[in-house]
Image (tube, rainbow, N blue to C red):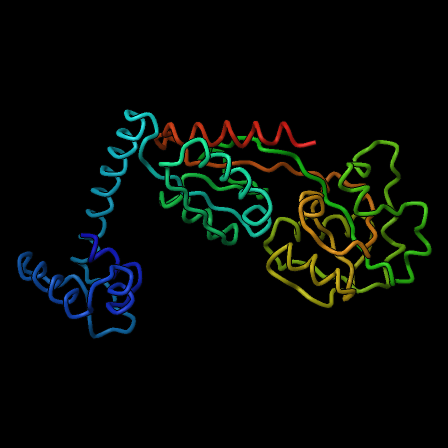
Length: 313
């Protein structure tokens, strides 16, 4: 079933053979042997990419049920052996995968070195698909998932801020609101006494936004709508860290999370501004699928993650 499932996932005998570290002829022969025993074809080899036949689709469904039972048993054994074996799969977007999770995973593996941790970096939509299918145990995200389907564990709260290249002339109109990267890292932007900037001061400047569908983009759109503005968007990107990096080169202003500003190691020639909007606040959660068996490894990972965040100044 592993051979067939790999071909089904890759939609290619050659790619599946590479992943399985066997030759393509050996893989084809093994699957033909199974098809002969079953008395039906599992794959339609005339299509490109390779597709499942009707019988093949039922075979895959049955295989997934078997693999789910096997995973449940493996998780049981992991608990029984007090985390001496097992695995944990975590998904996150670029910012969290690059700047937050490495430190948490390092602490977790130091305490439980026998647990194999798999980190997947992808878009929110793709991560949710993998979480729903059971490929991932957790997804770390600031994008709200359906609470009827997913259980959530609060990791932290974050705030969106405006970041503007120092060379932009509009900064001269906003001197009393300016913050440095050190101010952001010390949390000055979160103080009630810190004044939020009037966004119309930057109405003529170019902006870098994320693409439609991203949580930061949705919030940025609402923030500008509240201010009666239509930003001059010159570039749309997929990742927040990429947008910040491009902004640091002076191409345009952008809206980022204070999480990214506090963790990333970028040049200090940017100015930062507090945003006055309810849409600037959001929470970051670890999500897992409701009714999924919560392993001891999952429990311990959440404890370590939340404890690490509590210690963060």
